[in-house]
Length: 195
Image (cartoon, rainbow, N blue to C red; front, side):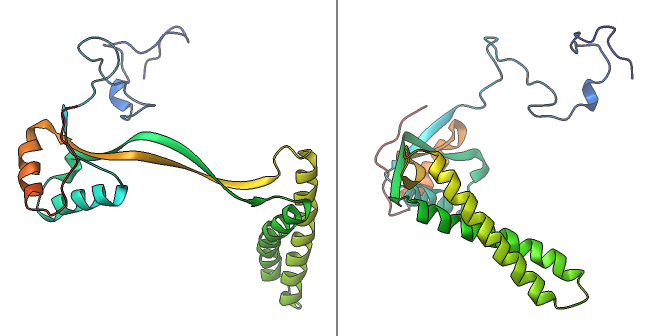
């Protein structure tokens, strides 16, 4: 395969090698849109219904799939996204050590199993020693890591993204078919708009 004479030269039409590139972000570049600002956005879509929770939107798409609708041409879009961080409890040095001991015990168990496979003697003792050493070191590292934060984050939490509304969208040419199918369903959407 011929290479460009300069390392900074990019592939241009007419140069060999484009057919060998896979499609996608690292492969063949997508053709620009008509206005020249990035790749085509895809076919136009229509919102056939908006729902207050994900299970309702999921039921709609499932109903469409059960009735032969080409659901690969639809999507569920969450809007009005909110980041919710739920505080699970206070983090103390003792609790950090306990969590670290649990994590370390799992790692120690894994190492103990690996060494236990190749041990000619009492392999259960090797596994138990690995588990104990892992728990001790995990507790030490957990306590030290928490102490190093200096009390700036003395709580544990879990983060989740939540949407205020879920819209079911389909390609515009299939919108009428989708609406007819949804007319047979008992779940009524809160609105229908074009995107």
